[in-house]
Length: 121
Image (cartoon, rainbow, N blue to C red; front, side, top):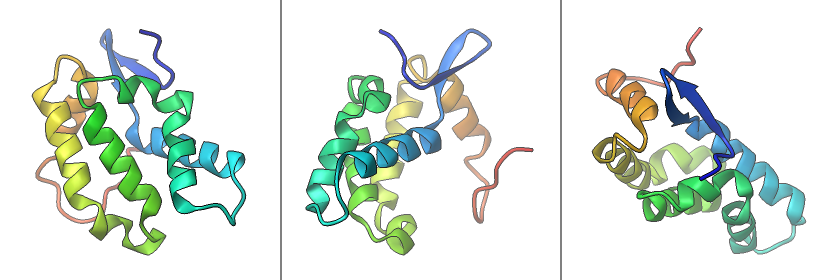
């Protein structure tokens, strides 16, 4: 399987979920006008090659639900409204750690962090 958006850490492929969401959103914006139906933007984002491997992974349904919620939510509500979808995606990726080893390790490393997420220096 060709990865569109992986990084490699110690030989294990990893996904940068924030980058993937940004790329899918940009693809949706580029392929639709601002007057389009919000579901059309979701469909365009889900069709982006940048998410194809995540969608066909073991966690594809969880990813679809998280991305759909993220795309349909008001920007200021995304953190509150889509928690369940992203927690489900997180759990799936941890449960399938061999498929998402580097990404799962990063999530486990930060599982007890409270407060807003901070980028690594």
